Image 1 (cartoon, helix red, strand yellow):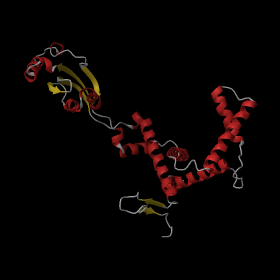
Image 2 (cartoon, rainbow, N blue to C red):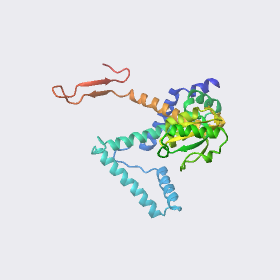
Image 3 (tube, rainbow, N blue to C red):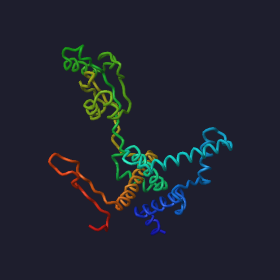
Image 4 (tube, rainbow, N blue to C red):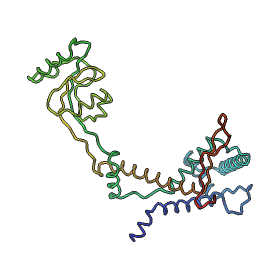
Length: 297
């Protein structure tokens, strides 16, 4: 059983499953190999999808006339699509190429979807990528604003205010009026930086709790600051952030499997990159060339 489980986790197995899924999808979409190029087959499954979409939109099933109109619209789309492809209108069109790429990537993503990972897998993922989930240090602090326009010698005035505060003066009795709040509760460095700027935030987070300090400077002016509480940076337990970790893990695994599928598909193509024309140089000189594995030189 362990051998089977280990085998199912191998990327190559995922790719083979993706390939099988694509083969089945193309088989159902394009019909039997013997179909003529100008034959359009509207399958029962497609009709059911049309009915279902109509019902979801209008909250009722379509009438026979409406269903016939849906089918005819589908056939019209298919006719125009085939004629456009036959005329080469899909070629050299960046928007069409991008849409086709996105469509195939979505298909590969669906085919490579994994079951919800277990706690052991997610815990290991947290340890491998701590920077994604680490919680910043948080501080609670009070600040007293000093308006530079009201102080000829802000440093000297700040020193006098600090002395008063250390002797027991009320914070409300010193400083200047401001619309900025006086007290912050468990703010992260990022939160503080958004309001006061990064240099101020770095200084505040580094302060030891319990002592009035200053002046510290922000884009607003000077501040006397006292930290009252500090929570250190930490890596949360899985139970606190499970949904986030699972989302990140599945997104990464999906991208890895799509990359594997692309590399396998890429091996089937010979790619020649020609240089653009240059003054005095030859047009179409080969800049790089890669061949599928096993291809002759």
